[in-house]
Image (cartoon, rainbow, N blue to C red; front, side, top):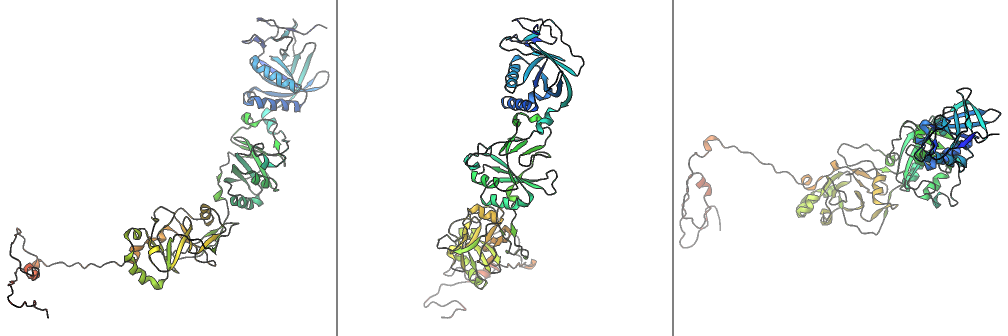
Length: 535
């Protein structure tokens, strides 16, 4: 049987197959490329291998996939794409051969085998002309056989890649904590939480100080919104705990708009196939439930501090009163307990019975300490603050303040920035100072005051604090006296009088102001007391 193909010689420019042309290296390449795969899994394997080396975004725009039937029996999947130079065809040939595919080059409905070791510049038809009976048919010519394929239906490459099932892969033997990098969760981890577990998961992550943000997402077929969390650099121990909770799924980001559940792998490297995920949607590939969730647009995550639910004990208070409300964390209950630690006093709580004594002692406070002192009016008494770790408008400067000078009331110390407790007590359990403020729900310039183990803490806002001196010192009343016109001195040029002053020069100053001058004579003998004075 005569051969159907003949090798192309170096420098050959004329070919029997229409559409063949030599590239820069002299290799014959057609306008189109056709790859025949015996089954769908072989096609998927080829796309996965290609996406690991190159970007599928360059191949998909011109790609078509057809399910075809071969004359004489058998089926095949035919993938077409635009022709390119021999470098790109060499890559396609190497990858298709690894998955039992065959590469052909040509155009229209006739394709010939691509080059191999026996023909380094490619193949051309051996004199004859191969044609297809109809536009739905494709003729592929090999060395000794010409196969005809008739297209049955066409597959959308984008839809095919989106509907591919995930492949299960083993996790590290030591769990996620053994190698978070291998699972793709070292930098960022996405956590999809069922609606009934969101509060408990948030409480656990918040208590372990995991930087997080989240958003509520509505999944298809579910009435209640699930919680999607984004964790930054989570520890392996936290990830192991989350992975073992039913209803919690860990997903590793594989691209900007796609994430795959850990323990599973998508057959396609999605980072190089962004065109397979059209639009602005976010795709979550869930392995255990076998679903792909499409979120409308990129998730707008918000800080986790706004997602953690706290129990707030509210009490009504009059405007301007210092009594307020402190918040309590879900799992951490802050309480007072005695301690032997010595701290610098930051304030003093003085009973109302000692208000008059405090008013008199203000004049003994140095001006610098007095300028930094603030007063808050409480039902239990007057709180004098003279130092705080908080800056801002309150202007509470550190240093020796009024609380260290005034020997009145109960001394107040600071256990965290803006968190005040009686001297001899501390907050339990011990947490970092900034976390204490977050657990109490304090704003930037707020203070919290604990007065007893059986009392709720008080919130002091900046408008509750007033300067100590202006709050305790009384104002002087000045009487305004207006002189009548008849008593006004006559207007005219001023005159200077140089007179000899006596021993008591200021006596009679009032008479001199009214126009008269007292006459004072030098006393002789025993001195006499001035009029109105008795010996």
